[in-house]
Amino acid sequence: MKTTAIAIFTGFLAPLIFQSPLQADTRITPDVIYGRKMGMALTMDVLTPSKPNKAGVLFMVSGGWVSGWFDPATVLERPNPFGKLLDAGFTVFLVRHGSSPVFKVPDAVEDLRNAVRFVRAHAADYRIDPNRIGVCGASAGGHLSLMLGTTGDDGNAQSDDPIAKASSRVGAVVAYFPPTDLAPYLNDKRFPATHFGAELVKSVSPLQQVTVDDAPSLFVVGLKDDLVPSTHSKKMHDALLDRSVPAQFIGFPEAGHGFQGEDDDKAADALVEWFNRYLIDEDPSERASKTLEERRKSAPPTLSLIGEWKLLLTVNGDAADYTLKIDRDDGVLSAKLISARSGEYPVESIRYDAGEFSMGVRRSYAGQEFDFVYDYTGTLSTEEGLRGTVAVSEDGGARAGSGTFEAKRK
Image 1 (cartoon, rainbow, N blue to C red):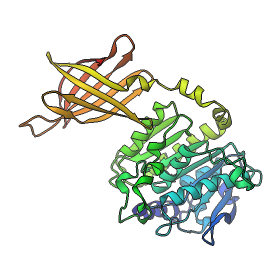
Image 2: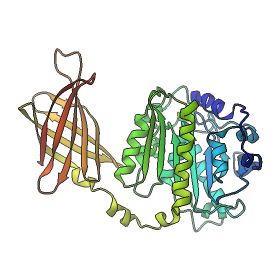
Image 3: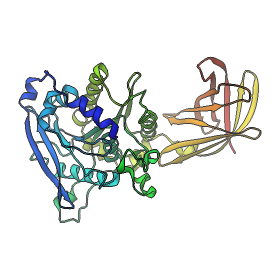
Image 4: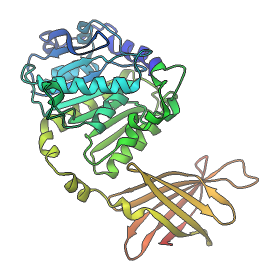
């Protein structure tokens, strides 16, 4: 996001004494044209390490969906994450997209899909395996990386353009503190790129695009981020796991919208490890060869949760009946817990993964200055429905009680 671009690129590009011998031998190919629009060139810089490992990583140069220029040689002065990627043998592509205010988020997404197609079509020129391409970025760059990870296609085999014929799919994604749902940022004055029609929000919100064939994705966030709350990443992380897509969430307790010091080192190490795991150790083409039906069969049966349930909650010897309504929109579970006497209680989270059910509910009582949080954990079976235990705590963390629940279909 725009306010982040300063923090991110100041952090990434400020001069440092450190430079490894491997980085010193990096070959820089600046201003490679991967496309054109409105008479302007779309460019990327290519950093080729001295010992390539045949995998490529596209870094989204984007803050607030503004893609600025900088001397690619300055990247070699930073160990995180570029130096570590190059030392590990990854060829790095610094990719720029059409920027606001002229171009909006949907335009940036399309530019970057074309960048992936270009790199894949020219993989032999860059000495990389066309099946071993990953993407990464921070904030808006992380959002765009996730869009590539969730909406890739196989290309247009009927096109006369060799670039258009190439796939835009990627093998792995790393996103630092990304927005995953653009609805809260639509028409935000801080970000002109978000000024587009509301009917397009879903198409450029990676959280709404999660499917079983998405790329393995790592989310690295600051838990004190006020610009893009960590819940953006957590919800998408859970949605990917719900589809049996490999995903990992790393949260730094004291970090905000940007990393420094030890957090910066740990984030870069995690990024390189993720790409090593899914671009080097594992062949992405083998994962991609699985049919959609095979992936669906391996995913947890969340469809069995959808519908209305009669739920009996017993806490500290007191029992109460509720209606639990569970729905799913594009892979994301949602729920409503309704009392005939008191109305609806907010369901803050709901998840079903590998047979385990969990749900968090917040309840307020008249005369109380704090809320109670009910954490449901249990299992789902055909014969017995939903059943498990409930831990109840005050908003401040004090334990208030515990109990059990069971639910049968209405």
